[in-house]
Each structure stands twice: as C-alpha cells, then as structure tokens.
Image (cartoon, rainbow, N blue to C red; front, side, top):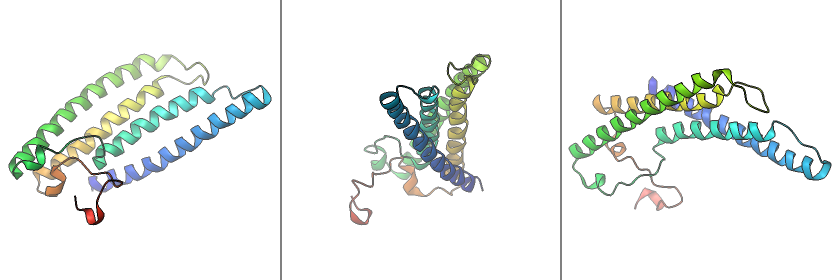
Length: 177
C-alpha cells in the first residue's frame, strides 16, 4: 500500500515538475521579450522562477531517491555476496536516513525562523521556500524506510540491493552490460 502511495506521489511530482518548468520558461521568456521589446517587465518573474526551481529540484530529488537515480557506483557492492549486499544496503539507508533527519531539522528551523518575513517581490512568507527542504526530507525518509521495510520483510528484489541504475542512454540492448 505504501509502495503504491509513493509511486502515485512520484507520478504527481513528475507532472508538477513539468508544470514548474513550463511556467519558469514562460515567465523568463516573457520577461525577456517585455524588457527588450517594450522596456517593461513582470516584477515577480525572477523571484517566482527561482522559487519554482527550488521546489522542482527538491521534488525531483524525492523521485530520484525512489528510482535510485542519483549518482552512485556499484563496483564493490556488486562483487559482494548477497549478505554483504544486504548489509551495505542497510548501512547506506541508515546513513541516508540520518542525513534526512539533519535536513529535516535544519529546514524546519529555517522555515520557522522565516515564517514572519516576506519575499521582496511576491510578498509571501519566505517559509514557503524553506518548506521545500522539509517536504524533501520527510518524503525521502519515507521512501528510505519503505525500502528498508521491504528488505526486512523479504519483499525487496535482490537486484534492488545494488543501488545504481544504469542510464538508458548507455544501456546495452536487452539490458545486458
């Protein structure tokens, strides 16, 4: 059930990231045209684009954690026996959970500190910008805990123990290396 929730969230985040990117392109392009063609501009364009970029990055990072799409190397782990791979999987996930906890703590503190201040152009609480870190840390921790649960209950495919997925651009036909 939690796996389906995570899959649904990642799909929704994918569409949200597309919307953010499209809106950013429209605002920046529109602002350039307005500045050079009509000597005017959209006041909130630069700030809103920056905020959308931050949110898009953090939402994309959650999707990346779920799909194991972040940079990594499997040179050592792939050569270990299954028990060693499981141990490395557990250690890596515990370390990532610790980083999520630090990120959650820091982002939450920044969100609270900036709750009373507003952005220069949009006049919205700056806390909304820092909340992206809170959302990332909480959701990434959920994904990592789900992966650990799946390992401990025997639901994790042994191929998932190696945390690196090969790029589709470099993959050989038929998935062979």
